[in-house]
Image (cartoon, rainbow, N blue to C red; front, top):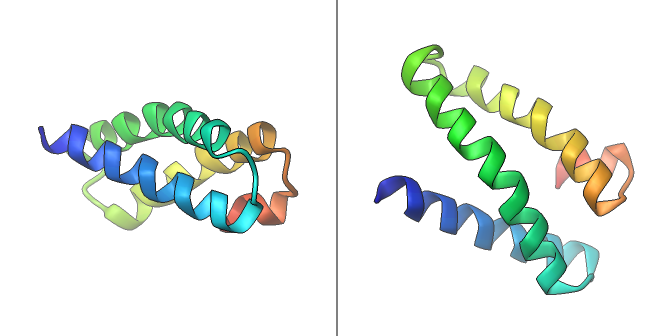
Length: 84
């Protein structure tokens, strides 16, 4: 249950922040957030539980995966993808 709750909160907050910053179609942003977080959140939790007992390193790996996805899906600059 914890995984699902954290996933829903992450998707909702991320889509809301993207909507506030980018002013794009909310439904599209929610879809992209679901897509990206469905890939990265399970990956992050798996690596944290079994390989990396270091939250900072694990989050850095998530950023390395998320930035290219945000860049490609949202069609923003790399700089924007880094801070989104």
